[in-house]
Image (cartoon, rainbow, N blue to C red; front, side, top):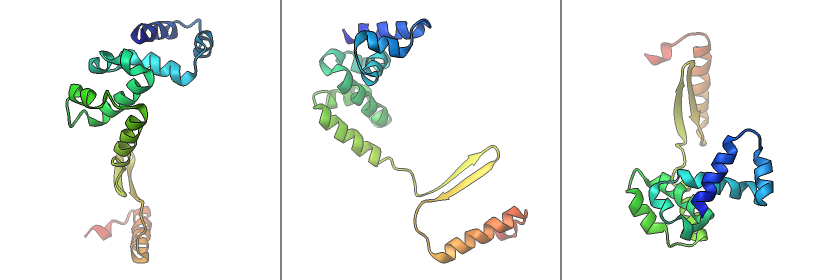
Length: 147
């Protein structure tokens, strides 16, 4: 079964005497298929219960969908809703979920050394000039623009 194969791949990968390339050559499968099967053992129980009928490809897609939606719905509900769909339909759903997750066009990321302010959209020339002015002031440790 797929789960037994997954267990076997994980066991072989843990041993250091064989490389992944040797394992996939021995089973005559692609690297992508190897990883799909190898990771199957880590999928949620609700997916593993249906993994034999789903197959490695659909199970991987369903797992990605579950990871995107698990904050909104229970895993069992997601699996039951999507398990009977075709692979291409699952891909389209996943593509839609990825699109709706696009990052903000304006963001601030804080690090231990400071922060990054990012604007990923067109802005008027006045805005560009204003940020250039702020940049120069900050380079000179002049924070009077805050007042």
